[in-house]
Each structure stands twice: as structure tokens, then as C-alpha cells.
Length: 271
Image (tube, rainbow, N blue to C red; front, side, top):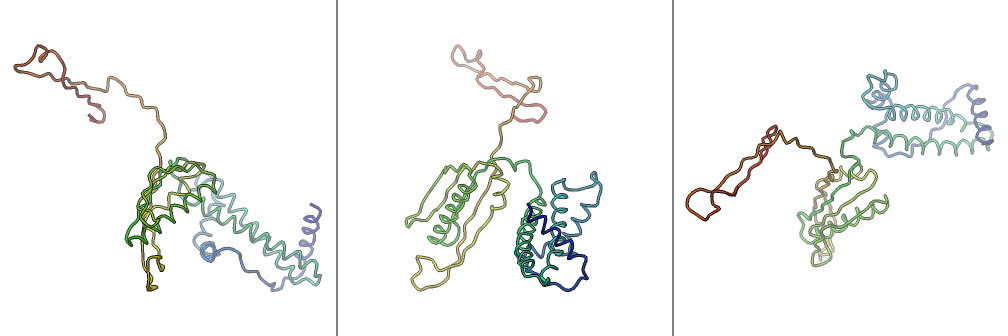
């Protein structure tokens, strides 16, 4: 705590000095993330408008505005700290380098948080899910690729401490996987897995290749939310019950028993 206070005092004293051209550190974020959050870009403009707009006209919630404000504060503190890299005191320069590293990590975490907050939410985000994987084009190599993908999802579920239950598993002759399905449940499972659905492709030299040629194989992933239990109430007045009886010659009960019953839900017309 004392070190942080001394660091704040040193930074304030330095900011009173004439500004120069300090050495800048490279950001530890990915190039794509840095491009999305470039100053003057559409995402930056959107975040600035959200921060300055009235609460009733914001298209996102408070979490996004708070994260954008923290990001702006951290970037300002990073720029102020970079000026200390030109100080004559070696100890102060080393302290500034450590602080810059911490600021860069915090800024990257905030950018990732904002990126997730920008993804539209769905009613099924809190649901469990059914995962299905199926080998596509590529023969045995596609089945080997499917097995690797299925094992990857199983290990990811274990890392996230989710419940993972294999429902179907149809292996191939050489250790691959033709088709498999699993039930995954846990906090945020469907929210984090819903974009995994689609066709996945791999280009590599398969184990079954003898001449070292590169093959292209595919597999498909389906992510389906599990429906939650609901309480269904049907008003008897909304039902029409039609009964039918057999006619013509027959046994003694042929005209006295209702051998066919049809129930129609009047509001929807469902039989």
C-alpha cells in the first residue's frame, strides 16, 4: 500500500514537468483486438457516446458503460506512466516499467470484457446444452479430427468445471469418431459455446497418408440449448373434445363405446 502511494506521488510530480516524447511500449493484446479498439474507430466512437448519453437512451447496460470508463482511465494512467521512462532515476524507471506491464494486462482484460458485453444476449444463455459432432468430408482423417475436437470440448468443460455427460459415441476402426453427442451443463455453458456450431476444417498431413501430402478434412458441430422446465396451464374451456363411434353390424358394444377421441385446442387449432 505504501509503495502504491509513493508511486502516485512520483507520477504526479513528473506530470508537472514539460512533456516530451516518451518511449511507448507495445500492447500485449492481439492485433485484432487492438484494431477493434483503435482510437477514432467506430467502436471507440460508440463507447464514448454510451458513456456520455443519458441512461434511458443507452442501448447497452451499466456494465458496458462502467467497463468503458475503466478502460479510458487505465489508458490515461498508462500514458502518464510512460513519461516516467525518461526520468534520470533508474529505480523510478524500473518501477514505471513494472507499472506499465500491469496497466497493459488490465487494459487487455477490460477490452476482452467489453467485447463479451457487446455480444447480444439470448434468453437461453443460462441454459445447459446438447453438443453434437459429426465427421464430414475426409474419410478416416475427418473421423480422427472429429475425435480430437470432441476431446477438446470435454477437456474445456472440465476446465470450466461444467458437467459433461456423453450420450452417444460411435468410434471408427482406427480410433476416430463418426458421431457423438454430449450433455453439457454449468454456469454460462451455452453462452460460451453457442458460437462453436458450424463446419470446422483442418489441413494437415494425416496419419493415414504415406506420401506426405496435405489433406483437407471437415467436421460439423451442433450446439442446441436444452429447454428449461415450464409450468403449462390449459384452460378446459379452450378444448373441444370430439368422440367417434363405430357404426354398422358388429358386436354388442359396437355402437356404445367411443373408439376414437380427438382433442382440439381452440386458440391454436392444435389437435
